Image 1 (cartoon, rainbow, N blue to C red):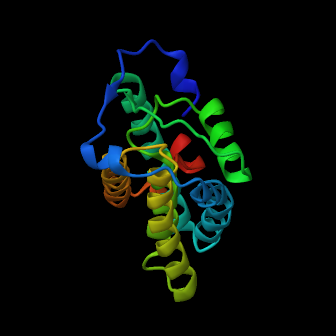
Image 2: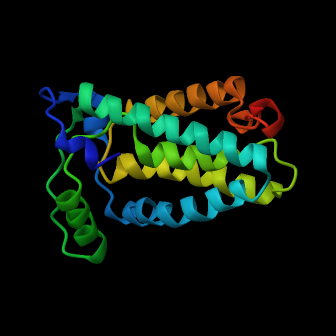
Length: 193
């Protein structure tokens, strides 16, 4: 969804940066949280999909729908931001340079990093088979991801509530639509006669 949307023609990107965004310093060490997020998503979604059929289907449906909405936003309302110059030569600074090289600032709102991390935590809430310490870890890590996207200057503040709103909307729709029921009441052999 992220890179595929770049193939579509898009209007000139909008910069939603505020004075507060521009005052946030670049802190290269936060790139560790940014990159560690990928591993936590794999582990988190695995916990969710193995916690029960209904939860697995609803969260998967909601996440897929949320990514689709992200793609629509990226094409119809592309956002950008001005990134600072990276001056250090340490490992963290070099990782920031690598990130900036492979991920130009076009598809910002909503933040997929925030979205995926939020889904990991929210997908676990209310599940009795997942220990509280695991849920707490994913909540804390979601907060750290929100901070990391700001401190590596990859996103602006608006990208965070946009991701949460996207996730909550799709989780709500998933609860109403009950996708775990899709295809469950197919045509039986008796009714075909």
